[in-house]
Length: 199
Image (cartoon, rainbow, N blue to C red; front, side, top):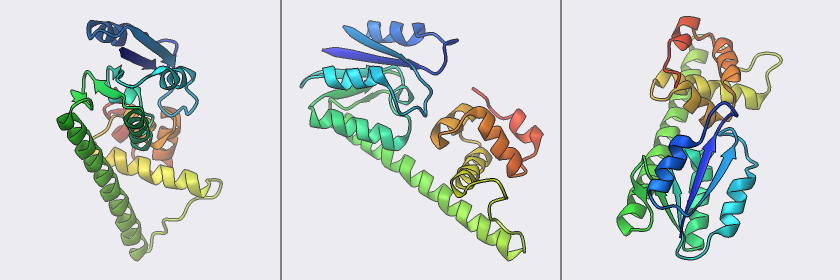
C-alpha cells in the first residue's frame, strides 16, 4: 500500500499541492499535519508509523516534509527499513525500495552530514582567528550557551548563502524571528539578511 504524508507549517498554508501529487502517485491513505519543521510532537506522523506494514511505501512530496532535521530523517528511514517499508520522495527523486535508491539516499545523507561538519570546523576556526585578533567570541550576557551555539551556527549557514531563511530556521530549530535576533546579535548587517533568499 502507498501511504502519503503531507505537512504544512501554519494554518495559512494548505495541503493541495502535496495531496494532488501524492494522489497522482497512487496513495490510498494520506496523513496530513500542521506542524512547524522543528516540532517534535507530530501525532499524525506517529499514527502513520503505527499503521505501516511490511511491503508498504511511505510517500512524501519532499523529504523536508517528513524529517525535522537530517538526524530525524535518518532515524525515520532506519525505522522504515526495520519494518521493511520503503520511502519515496516525489520532488527529490528518492526511492529506498530499490538498492540504487537506498545507496543514493545514504550517499546524499553522508554528504549533508559532511557539509555540516565542515561548517562547524569553519565556525570554530573563525572564532579562534577572532580571538587571536583580540576579539572575544564568548556569549553575551543574557544568552545561554546553547543559544549562543545556535546563533553561531545560524550565522554560519546564513553567510554560506546556500540555504533560505526558512531552511536555516528549520535546520537550527528556531523560528524566523529568533533567527533574525541571532543575526543581529552576531552583528550581521540588516541589509544582508533582509535581502537574503526568504522562501
